Figure (cartoon, rainbow, N blue to C red):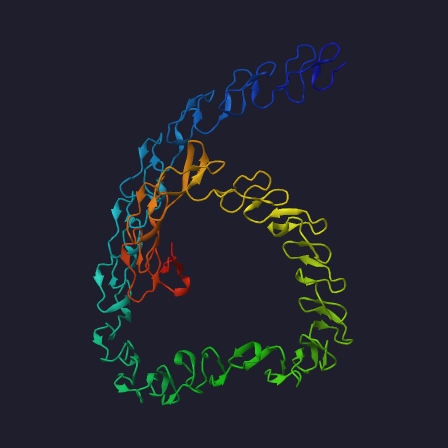
Length: 582
């Protein structure tokens, strides 16, 4: 009985070696019939040498081929360092790295000039292609200086010459020639100002350039025409005229017409069409071909000033309608908005209703807006309520009251639906509950459940509602109870408890951790507490030390740059203006 592929033994339960191919192994000895790639030995359980490429001999491990850079039976000898590939048996290089040649790639290609990409023939070291500017078998020779785009590798003949040169080595000069034939020196394009087969003739004086064969002028300077550019254009206002006829082709800025004798109208940049006088562009606020339509109508809200279409108004001010918004919506002036095309009223001004807004919302003028069709009041003026806004809001309301119930927000010190009751704490209460009258916040300077106690005199403003402790101390005082002074005499405010405290603000003119330093100048009204630089100068001065004067015409100037500032940017300090450009 034969075993299934991959198994051996009397009961066919033992697995063949992993190095065996799918053909399997001998049922009795377990030796592999054939090894997988990368293995050798009777049982195909020994890896081939590490640099073997593909397979090795099953009995002696000789490699079939080597990976790049190695040679020998077992591929364990490195090729020469400049080899890419070498012979498996001899180690001779079959391909060199760029820049090297020879049997073992040990010789450098010509380094002084340069093979293109540093590549040379392996056997001789000759360059296949030279870098631009070099020639010779090893690219050891430099091309002539006048060569353009290099020269031929074998002969050194120039491929093309620089402008003004010709010959195989581009050593011969083409006089007055911009471009001449490399082989015979014939000039095909003369330099500006010359003509003739050898470009030896000078163009007429006024010519910018002339015909190479005839010497006739091709381009004249502005203001002249004719074969020799000797004739002046017909008028002083002509910028350029036809070289053959003298007719003006371009007028000076601001003129038009055949002889440039008409002035452009209200054109922007003073430019107009030479034939029609039509403006290229109009200045802001004008339209039309000649920019003679003024785009300014006070009753137009949104408009466009178009050169071709003229003045186009797309939206009118309230109360006006029509193409140019020149018509009033209603003769009585009570229409707020009307249709721009038909003039039909869309909404009435405050206090009026009806088809043409002819009726008053209320006789007492207390109704702000009412229904356009029924006259029923929708919104009362501040301080009124009722169907017709006929009732005044309760006197202690803070602003408006509800139109139907007259309920409102109360002024400070009052509570109740109609704000008819005084807060339990009286005038000392800042806010009290509108429902119960209990005080939720005391006015500055008071504390206690009914705000009945005054804050200590050492406090500035508020103190704690329940303990009476100061929220902030008066200048010069510190500690929890504000009962200790800031020791430094120039310290205006400080913070901290016990002996651990620090100044938070110095008196005017001083700076430093303990406010021990004076500001750098008497003109410095205030300086930075930690850096000492001025942040507020006396009027008329600027700079970190306020030692530089503003310009004579300045009322005040930037502290940093000294540039003038408008008066409304200046702050009034100690009855003086100073710059705000800190």
